[in-house]
Image (cartoon, rainbow, N blue to C red; front, side, top):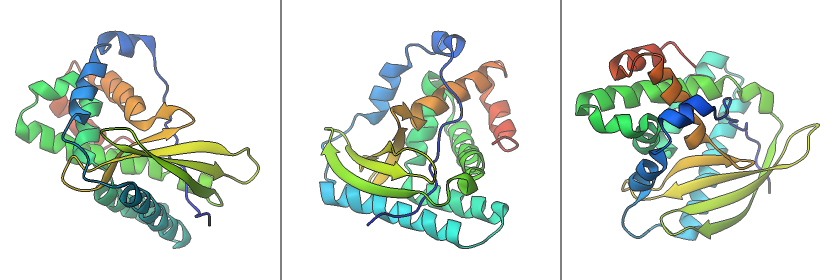
Length: 211
């Protein structure tokens, strides 16, 4: 049976200048996602995605204000997403030069930024229906493939990438029609950091006002 959810569509596409500066980051991302063999099972990965979708649906059906919905979504993101991995991947190679305190502050600020950025789109996707089709073992993670139907539009594919490398079952990426949220944010954050002269502290402060 389908479950109603909003779809968090990445709002930026790749650009040549950002990719030129950070073109070697594929290796960094591979390192971040490397880890021990999965203890996570196919059923557990599917169950996680269904719980995630169910919680998002409850927020949308709550009738709360947009601000309250965004706060709820930030909580959901914190519970179900591997925020540390996503934030480090968004910083790319620059994460290596960040101190522990800088990285911690950036991760917290990034979590709020993501909640605001994608939470604002919730109402646009009320009435959607998602059906999990299959879960595939990709070696270091499971990919839960789904089909989404929205009112007045053709169905499209959404996949959730789930891993337990952090010690918990969490999703670390959402793939929508072949476009990765993780990759989109890496390009976006890279561009924002470039415009601030590589100052991670300044980016962290500014992310609190963006989204």
